[in-house]
Amino acid sequence: MANKVYITGASGRLGRVILSKCDAIPIVRKKSGLKDEILSDFSIANLEKILKDADAIIHLAGSRDFLDQKKAWEGNVELSRKIVEASPRTAKIIFSSSISVYGKKLARIPADEKTELHPDTPYAKTKIEAEKLVEKHPNHAILRIGPIYGPGFEEYFKILRLIEKGKMKIIGDGKNRIPFVQVDDVADAIINSIEKGIGKYVLVGECKAQKEIFEIAANELGVEAPAKHTSVFLAKIFAQYELFRSTHFGGSAKFIPEDIAVLSSDRAFNCSKAMQEIGFSPISIKKGISQMVQRYRKRIKS
Image (cartoon, rainbow, N blue to C red; front, side, top):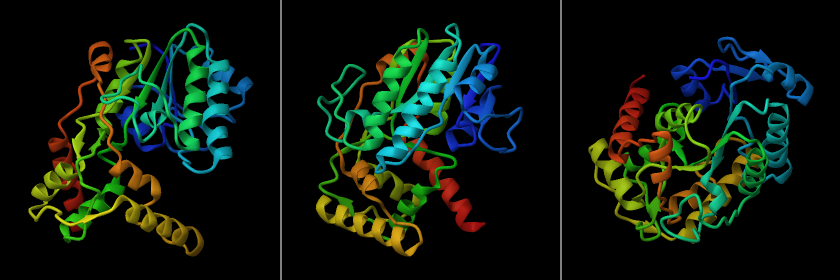
């Protein structure tokens, strides 16, 4: 591994998994208690001082706001511009992008790194702009990552709970494929990218059908698989209501519109480039769900 590796977004869930697997130096806005962390105001001048001896920079930090264009632009585009401008030309930048750049309706299935982009959220549009900035750096790897699950991603417990209680409904006909990816697989690919590969890479796991994913989860939980269906339209109306309720009256939304879009869109990808060039090796969705169910049961008992 390169001698000096820095990481932004290290206090996030993916960042913490990466730190558990490699010696990277976190750059943070405020103290997070991470080993060897360096405080920064993320100005170009300050970043230049910090990164002057960098061999690689893992850039995870950004905005996950799917609705607010301003927040998404500041968190994804402006921050990436500062990282690129402050990084030594000899250092490698590994940037965490997203398959959201392809939109929910893919131009081609299976999609790959060359598939036409159709961003359909402010978040996706800013990820594309950030990619363009990173591409200007001579040594880079842009990783287009699918929806992550695994340790730390407990928002999926709500789906397991609904399946366990027999209340989860299949959205649409359930035949649409969902490109989930396990967090450890993503972390390993990012670490591999420090010394391998250049350009863009798609990182998703097995793209199984929604109905099949629910069946696997139900089997692991020891309950009947969801059999009732609801339309995508009604599911989106419910998610809009939940978003409105949580925004104006507090509490957390059971689902937001982006959740429904992820669960109901048909998206499948070819990750052969990432497998061949950076050693991406995703586990089976069955194994990943089994691990999630084990953590879910421990959480319920504790």
